Amino acid sequence: MTPLLSTDLPTYTNRLPPGTLGIAILSGILASLSSDSTTNSSGTATPNTSDDNDSLTLPPSLTPSRFVACVRRPESAKRIKKALAEYIPHHPITILQNENVRGVTAASVIILACKPHQVAEILSADDMDEALHKKLLISICAGVTETQIRGILNLNHHKGFELPRIVRVMPNTAALVRESMTVIATPSPPLPQDLSSLVNWLFTRIGHTVTLPSANMDVSTALCGSGPAFLSLFLESLADGAVAMGLPRAEAQFMAAQTMRGTAGMVLNGEHPALVREKVSTPGGCTIGGLLVLEEGRVRGSIARGVREATVVAGQLGGGAKATGVNGTRF
Image 1: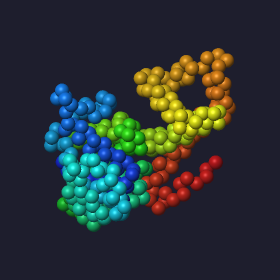
Image 2: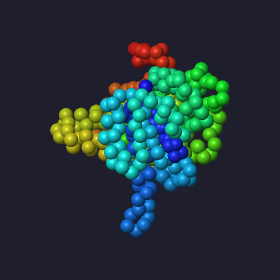
Image 3: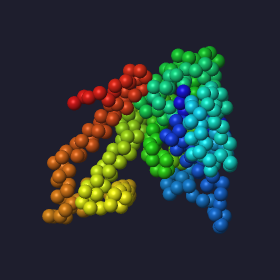
Image 4: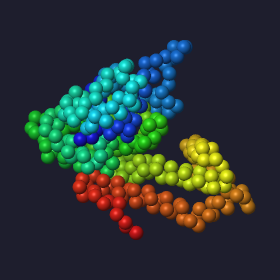
């Protein structure tokens, strides 16, 4: 077994692999709750982030107040305790090892944050159908569809228990700095408004959200889930080029990161990337010279192909044992 976040409305259970998205999500929620409970010297609530979504509020009956983290190994429990040390004195957090059913039973909302091939094992556990009865199950498992999850639950379903409401969500690793781009799949059937608001509230604690049809989740996984790795490679390449031309490594990396951040800011403010590029490309200048080298090296096509390939692989990750070797050479 790997991770769950369990929460009862007021409790959440999180099945998390420490150091990954599970801890980042829980940390973001706890940080938000902590800042909501504090006021500055003027008596005004301290804002959580600069995101407009931060204005989302929940009624007390939906605001999480107790948390359960379900893990597999003692090392994972230690890592969670260390990562959440500043919040533990103020928010009830229970860490359970190899006790997923107990954690889910104690919660009203469950975040399934395990490896895709572990989903069937976790959801097929004895008495899990009873533990999940009429609850909200949020899956952040790449490549595992809502239909697959429902199928697993149906195989182990006993009369007298209702299946949970299921919603698929794809955050990314920038949740660690509360800058995630999280994609929420439109669930079928749709969630009631109060639960839909809750899902949005949870994931705006760690960044921005968009809601898209479930058919878009594999490409969203490739773009947003894999995107930080792709951008990191490009950022490293910028820094490497600068180091080769004499800049110290630390300064080159900082300058490349800030340049990428500033460029993203312009695009988020409404500038089209092509216009940003055109504004910098003066005739006979260094920028157009560098751009032509990148175009001759087919950088644009290679990056786009990387997203396409990651989309194909994402669609195969939910295949359990069949997912072995999904990254085999195709060209």
